Length: 524
Image 1 (cartoon, rainbow, N blue to C red):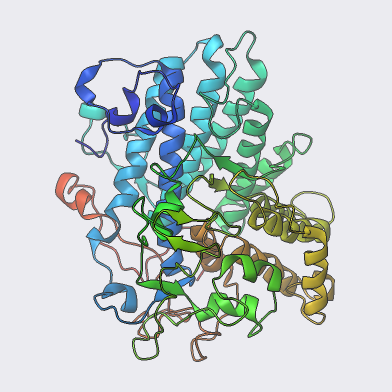
Image 2: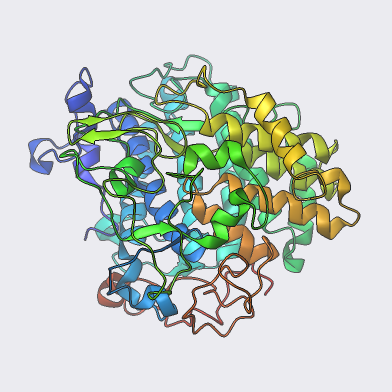
């Protein structure tokens, strides 16, 4: 069955990766081969993870308060009132497990082989990343009995907290494998489209994922000993990500970056989506309703200076339409279907890389860990570095270099000057631990806007930040105007298990409530 079988359309690509066309072609006939080289499967799996990452971002956009409906469209249905049905997010589940099967194939083919140790370690790290995303979205999921193909087509659901703990162990093992390899075959830009074979960056990604998971469960009383022990064992000398983790196998117009394909333009030059615009809640962090952020706002939002079309989710009366021929997140120039310029911001162009994890997120994770004394150091330095890293990513062009037209340091200074009394920007103005945490999480929520938006939603559920007023207007209320949620914040607490599980794993499928059933780390 597709849910737990190896994704042969990825795994059996044994043709050479000498051209971009071959590299990105994931539609190869699965009957054309019976076995594939792990070093050919690994890059295809990483590219597939980039596509999965985009799907999680899209889910987070709606539930995390980033995206609303444009005018002139109907049929939004359960997005408006959050009355979800099991079939709504089948793709998140099915595609993530397909991708996990790709990594399982790599792990099986490389297990115990010193020369393939680096590929094995990378597959372990990406496996942990994918399972973390699944748990944060669905809670308990198949784990110990998953990925066994025909040997078990109805895997049990494992306890989410137990999975999290085992993922930390797997990340530790990946770092140990990298450090212990004696004669490993190096990865390179063909076999590793994220780090180009830099195994120190792979270790830093593993360490950063561990940091994220430990912080996420740090408020779970039953895991206090686990958290304390693993924070003490965290490799502080190794450190964490020092740049954005970005996948780019050679995206081009005909095979574009997944985010561009979702929210930018199709290869024909037509808009990918004309029914979505930014929320007032998100826009207010840039345009002055809550904070003033001319630097980032001007590269993210079309017509920012004169006024971008924005709306509150669920408002069909006042919903403006999009700017003609433009996604409201694209600030380049559209001249014709064949003349679409590259830009900065979140929609840079079809050849931009796909973010797996931002440096900004890494910095804000470290800031929270230091604020709570989980690791030593000055949280204010990481907080400021997180803001700077966010500007830096948004000011990067499609080649992943900061544009020569932008001065990151000057614009960060202007941001602080434009918000002189806000502790959300100038954290040293915060006078309580709660205000300091609010500043860190709010800036993280801003940084992942349209990039890894599911992390904004995760952190909102965990902390209640950024602050929202369910009785306020769209700039103050994160939820849909038509929400039927019973929660104080008027958002759903999670999504439902997919209808594919109802059909194929009915004995383990669980019926849950999207307002009252919580992911294990959610205290609300």
